[in-house]
Every structure is written in C-alpha cells, then in structure tokens.
Image (cartoon, rainbow over all chains, first blue to last red; front, side):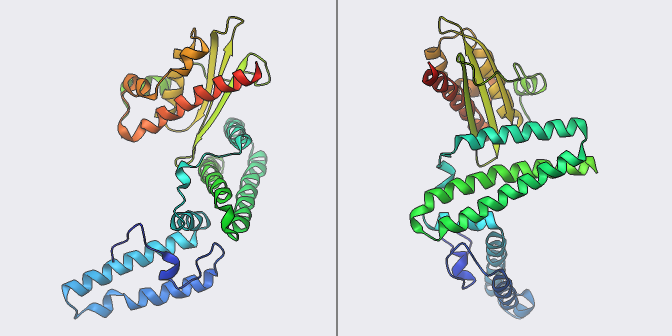
Length: 174
Length: 125
C-alpha cells in the first residue's frame, strides 16, 4: 500500500479518470477515507494494522493534494497515460520569449516599485494560467490531444515559477 | 547546497548580460527553458562577415548554476566559428564549473541555447 508510480488517485477517490473533476466530491471522498484510516480507530489493533493504516493515510493525503491542484492533476493524468511530459519539447517558441520578457518586466517593476504596473502584470500572469487550464480541459476531453496537453502543462510549470517570483516581489512591495 | 567558487564568481559577476536586437541579420538568438524548474535562458551571438562570433550575450532567469553556465558559454564562444560553437559539450561546462550531478541539467540548457542560437542565425543567412 506504499505510494508507487502506478497509483491511480482517481480510483482511490472513486472519481472518473478525467481532468475535470467535482472538487466537492473529492473533498467528501477524502474526508470519508481519512475517517476510515484515522489512527483513533486502530488503538487496539496490531502494529502491522496500525502501520498499514498509517501508510494508507499518507497515500490518501498525497492523492488529495495531487487531485485538488489543477496542474498536478494534469501531470498525474499524463503519467497514467504513460506520457513523459518532462521530455516533451515545447512547440511554441514564442512562449519562451514572452516568458523572458515577463521576467524582465518583473525586474523593472522591482526597481521602480511601481505597484500599479505590478497589479497589471500579476493579473496578466493569472489570466494566462487560467487560459492554460481551459486549454487543458479541452485537450484532455479528447485522447488524441495528449501532446497538446503536454504543452499546456509545461507552460503552467513556467507560469507557476513566474507566479512564485511575482508573489515574492509583491511581499516586498507591500 | 553549496556552489563552487567558479559558479559563485559567474553568479556574482556574470559576463555579458544583455540583449542584442534579435531582428538584426547577424544576430542569432537561442531561447530555451527547463520546464521542471521553470528556468528560462536567452543566449545571443553576433557574427562578423567571416562568420566568426565576435560578441555574445545572455539573459537567464534561473538558479546560480544556470546563470554561471550561460555566462561561461558566452565567454567561450567569442572568437569561435559557428561550427566550433556547435561543438561545445555540456560536459565541458560541468568540468569547468565543477557542477554536481543535480545541476548537470543547467549545463545541458546552456549547450541547447548556444545550438539554438547558431541554428537561428543559419536560418537567417
């Protein structure tokens, strides 16, 4: 019951294996599973059973974390389809150029401490993330488009790093 | 993780940071990214009429090893022909900067960037 590369978290939470999920159903299933494996229920149990429950609890926590997040859920789905997105070469080269430009702009904002400009940039980044997630939904609804889904996953990874840097700057600006 | 002195030197005093006009005919631009860590690297070369790289610059948003790798490569390619620049291997960067195994991908990124820059230039000419 140790988390392995073959774990299918969708099955663990009895959800359909698809990108778009009902997050309130996920939360319900998570609470129910955690209730079942809660340590309090294993007070009189053997060491072996307690250890199993502990492992199951860890698995349930990992799965919940993966499925709740829009990016890691997409990564998990690609993984289940045996698609190695880390080796995927982004077909959209203008995206990388735009990433450099956005980071340059972030540097300029850090120097000028222009909070209005920061707000515009930050909402632009968030909008891009939203677009990628919408694209993911579309690509995952057809199994022919898994390579396109890789593109969006990679874009979200770059945007995620950019977003982290923007948030760090926001704290310095406030 | 501790950086080696050579990495720190390039990180604290990066050589050739900047940009050339990517529309210029004698400028080649290589854009590469490492999705897993979100690092992005832009490396540019400028060639003279003899096809020798007379100037190079970079902009890297990433960790110290990625910055050092690209900084080092811009130093190395100056005065080289395009073919010589294409033959730079990431293992040479690893050796020079004494990069640990977990940072080898940074040197791969720099090798990919210089290759992309040369290819971009060849496409233009």
